[in-house]
Image (cartoon, rainbow, N blue to C red):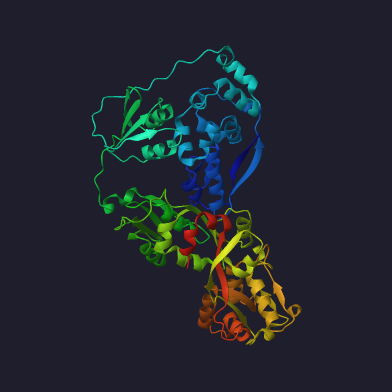
Length: 556
């Protein structure tokens, strides 16, 4: 059996992104460098460590697989917690489901994260009607530690039963709700969800023919009060004893908000900030620490229902307290009703498009962001489309055309005039004028900047072999091309916005003459009356569209 081992390298810049994602596993040392304080012990922690590795802006976190010896594996016992066991050994879930169709309920996230969190395999045996010995021997045989089970569990072969763990309720001292809910296998997930979401001082009364052991363990595990009566059937009254908290002005509790410090990040923290804003519940918030006052981000989050206070704590240290206002209308879906989606953008082509759309109140109320990724390396986003990891992708159309045979839909295209060829030291008014020059090109040969440029060259009837595209190693970074151009190391460069505008203004201040070739002008010359060049769009996973067809109307 294998497990993942994670490591932090010396490239860490102390941004604390990994700690924010997987605080149980990562921490910061006295030199403000991240380290693994604990390797993941189950699949939940492993998933968080994987997420931490992906959000690291400098790629300082790595992983490798290591074999687990059976000597390290403890046997599954009758009192082992189901969720803990299956999280540690996920290969056991299909084995358990194969033993009884009743275990199919483990596929339901609501039940898996509640009932399985407190129930034992002894409870599983009671629920399924199987022998606990049959369950334990099957699972431990799969793990290769059946011999350890014989050493630890002689009752499995001798038939000795453990004493029944009795859950004792208490006298009803709370006001009961008038509604009654019938508990059986068909509605167990619905009842568990209601119990899990029981608000302070609320009550729920459940009627069950058989003793609802799984429900009782869940109630106790959640710290709720209960009363049990047994007549012809079981009557269980469940109560959340937590007091109803009085609303406190957010300005008085803003220091309690979670801190998101992005000062040390070397890449744009937009995706991290937006993902955080989508995770924040109403009447809660977070603190953004920047070297400057991020006016565009403040304005953007304001449109997404946030209010803010900005304070300068020290030179180059601005704290922005963001608070998510409570919706005035009660029509928005709850987080549990909204689909959780994985969104990605293929920077540089679609980044501004995603920024604009994520400001949409309509989109914000329709989805939860499970994961948000803005790629520096464009090719990586294609993998997420192909393997189905991304539900929604913002991509260059010329790149997405490679996936025409994949299960995807492109419901919207966006006009975006964002590419320019800039030259210095010579005059260039048309593509003919840059023949034979070294054209410093962002990213790599198959990326949109090169593909779009070559398309326009061919459309103008020119020979592509007359043009010399050069790329950086391992690929051309737009910011490096920008610097090389203004320093005179490159005389011909393809730049996108905003680097193109920065370069033009910088050269004007320096008094250096430059030439500007607009892709939009070339496109309009080729396609009279068509309008601007449509080079970015939304790519939706086919399965996502079939499951949530109504959401295709949310995207313009």
